[in-house]
Image 1 (cartoon, rainbow, N blue to C red):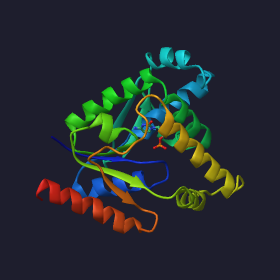
Image 2 (image 1 turned 30 degrees about the vertical axis):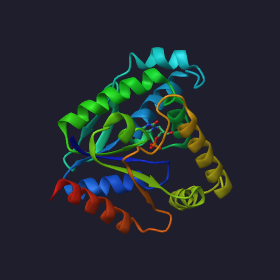
Image 3 (image 1 turned 60 degrees about the vertical axis):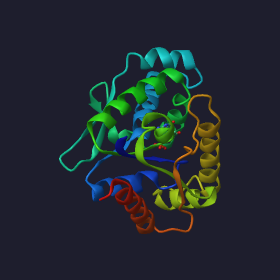
Image 4 (image 1 turned 90 degrees about the vertical axis):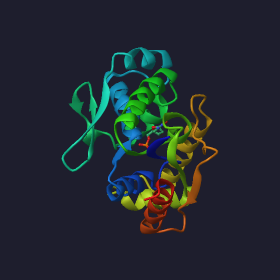
Length: 222
Ligand code: DC
């Protein structure tokens, strides 16, 4: 049994903020695996490799080195060939590129290998799409964090400083990413059989974090 926590779910369900805070309260490290796929996507964009060219992406990723390190405040920094690219990973083009590269088997194999290593070294609260099913299938606690698509789009839209693209576009992007993540051949997003599903549509952030830490303490006998 691995003592880590696996949190999966669709984009915008609150996985990253919940995982980060749960890690802080429980004394673990938050691992944002999406950032690793985003780094791969960023590389393909910067090299002009077409996001539809699975073979080109597979060739390129075999020469790529994606890694994470933690700073003194336990914050994750994501590195692409030795360069800290953390601040470049949240643009919408990078989100789309990440969703595309995450469908490529060779990309997933390489990211999952490193994530598994990290889960052996550290107590992780890890979020992604395949954590409970593939990366840490023996995690002490698996959570599937969900929320209605409209609510996830509303939260995303509220966070955006530039609202020029409009709410309908944000909702359409979320639906498109859900579809990609759930219908790809390689490790599609799905709830692990033994995951606890938490629907956050009508929950506050504090309620969700408290529930995750309560479940963990109960399982760990803390
Ligand atoms: O969680 P995120 O939005 O940062 O993830 C970016 C993309 O990477 C998303 O489209 C799904 C993909 N991803 C994945 O396939 N597996 C993971 N473990 C994490 C993210």
